[in-house]
Length: 337
Length: 114
View 1 (tube, chains in turn blue, red):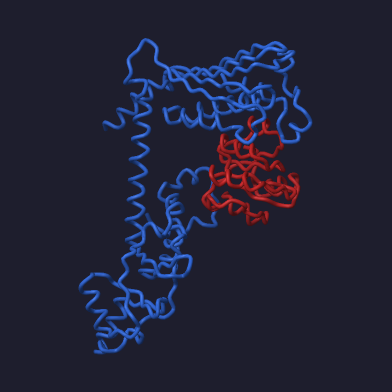
View 2 (cartoon, each protein chain N blue to C red):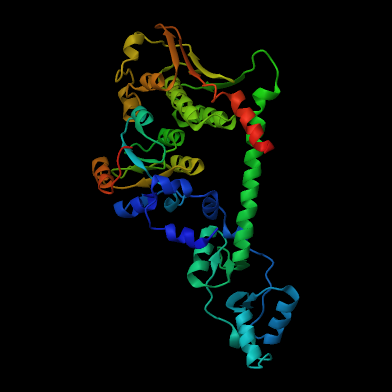
């Protein structure tokens, strides 16, 4: 975990290949705030304290530097090197003010850890005082704090995701029945554009949780999104999405109670739409919805007649290697290792 | 290429604050205002150029794992859309240029459809 590496990547081209190498650690360096990893129990000195007080502080607390505070505000920083200078000059009774560095670079507690990493590599300084939004000193940060903070988050992250995936992917293995399936239902309201895409996002996330491959989840997500938007745009009273997940296939059905499709053949043609001008202005009604669904699923059937509801059924068959049972066995083996 | 390089080169305004643009790789571009076409054509980690700025843009971008949406011709999302984008981690950028110009500039930077 070298900060130089991260620093060096800035401003260079990130190709597909290098993008894969952007590690979780680097992501975390952007995600975690300095306030989360800093030491908040700060030992500070006043500028009028003698250097011998610094010596004592360092001896008892084993820290290698401290902020200097006067009337509540940060006026300098003093470190082991400064103490050595005072010791060499046999000047331990001199005030801290004489040896401190008054030009203090501070970091903000709400900035991402990457800021601290960049400053450490740029300024060759071992520690920075951390201030809050009101410029009040709230902590100190060292390279050690950064490393520790990143490692802790990395581990927390890893454990949480492992547990979630492990539990979800075992669903099909731990329950014995002749035919096990998981059914997800969503009620979709007509004209509810604000929530359009919510059900499809939830379904996609559920599939990933269960161990589906990103490609399968993506195909389901696209197909369901189009079907969901059809319910929102075209139905009188909305409709229902029902997704049945079985170890070897995913079946998605939408049903509604009208107004129905006059000519299914025409509706299936690319570019054909019955959407109003207003809907088209929002970017819907390209006449591509059903075409997209057909492209994403293995089987599709659409039943409808005017003044009655429509039933759309979509199915994605999982290859033996993609099946949920297979996946869950694999995960178990990986975890056992 | 990352999103920050694109932001700098095209002088785009960053509207969201979830993902630092320099951490977001961009590998392709898709330009369209028709959501179903985007559904069919846009690749993961791509940039989507459109003048649509309503809520469903965020839903589409989330589902497709699109890196960022460039809103053209000065089109502005309303606060609810911005909030949703931040929640879902979809980066929104805006410009007064047309979709045509933005696409051309992205082409010049070496980006292609896929």
